[in-house]
Structure formats: structure tokens, C-alpha cells
Image 1 (cartoon, rainbow, N blue to C red):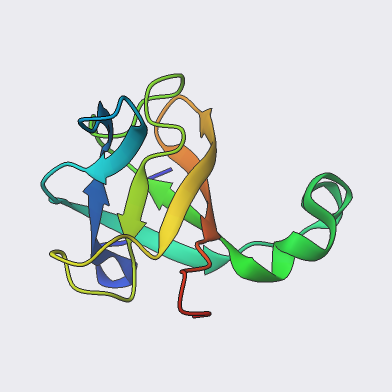
Image 2: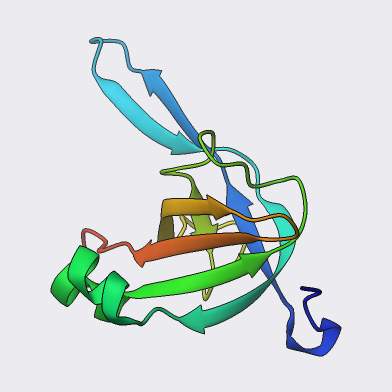
Length: 116
């Protein structure tokens, strides 16, 4: 399956970086944004509804062809879908499914501290 070029949009992948502060507390930060081209769709389907339940309303499915997202490595990384690349990601990767010619990526909306 080849992804149609006209349906692709640019989003930004930001890898999760865990560090420690002066007191030894774990602090999560985000690496520099990497632009990737994806086909973004609302998440749906009976199987996903059984797995994610009510959270499915806050999830999207990305179809991706490339090497930047790898199953087993990029879970919990951030995706800037509707925010600028320099901002904190508004979605995090929850699941990655690798197929022969593309990758299905399930992303979940992040609830920020200010209620957004």
C-alpha cells in the first residue's frame, strides 16, 4: 500500500528524554522535533473500541512510511499534530503496528496541566 501524497501532512515527532534534576527527581523532556509525513485519521473500529474504551474519542491513527518510527523504540514519544514544532507535543504514541510497507501508529491526546 502506497500512501497518497495529497493525503499526507507534516507533523513533528519529538522523542521522550528522561533526565534528573539536582534532587534526583526524574524529569521528562522532549528532544528536537523531527518532521515526518503521515496520513492522520480518527481512530475507530470495534477492536480499538474494545481496547481503549472511552479514550478512543481522544485518539488518532497515523499511517506512516519511513524509518523515524520503529515498533519497540518510539512508544511514549510525542507528536506535535496541532501545535507548533517548538511546543510540547499534544499527542503521545501509545501503540505501533508494523506492516510490510507502512506503520500504523496510535496516538493519544495529552491532557496538559492547564486543562487543555
